[in-house]
Image 1 (cartoon, one colour):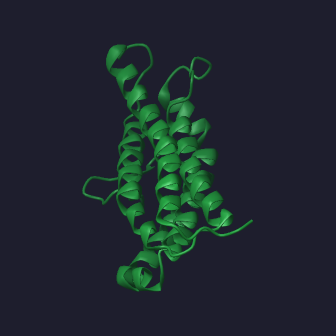
Image 2 (image 1 turned 90 degrees about the horizontal axis):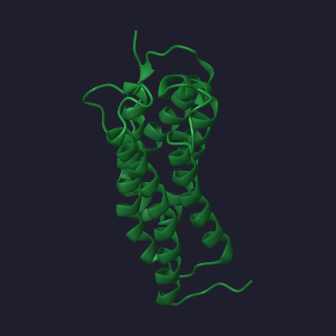
Image 3 (image 1 turned 120 degrees about the vertical axis):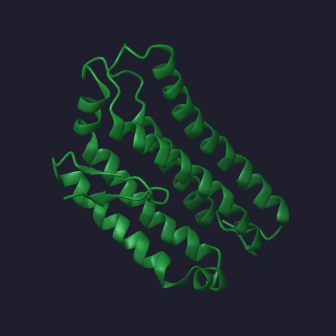
Length: 186
């Protein structure tokens, strides 16, 4: 396939990305609205709500920085597929946080713990893909973020893998952490 080098291509890609990101935010907001509408239907789990808030901020943060893609001179089909797939990861994470039904689990805690491998595995993949997305924006952009960005993402990936495989329920976000921060509490 031919690479596209016109500004209209970026607008086209951004529109499709916006649809998928919009579905992700809709899923999170609909899930939260369901809790508000029927607070006694399923027992709420504070860790689950922490991850919902974290995911909301992660998605908003992602979308804010995607304007940097406008600096790409040429966009190939591979880049297009990569970006759309990246957006799909946010949708899948949102669906994992708020599935169509949790009736078979009883409450959000049992559901979340039973799906932790999927959730944290996909979150680790999202952080890995974020490294590729950052690289797409150019070497100047990568250098501007500094070494801390790479260290942070690699730490998040490791923490996600640990969270996926541990049954320790204390592995949760803590107060004062930046967006999507995770910490293993003692």
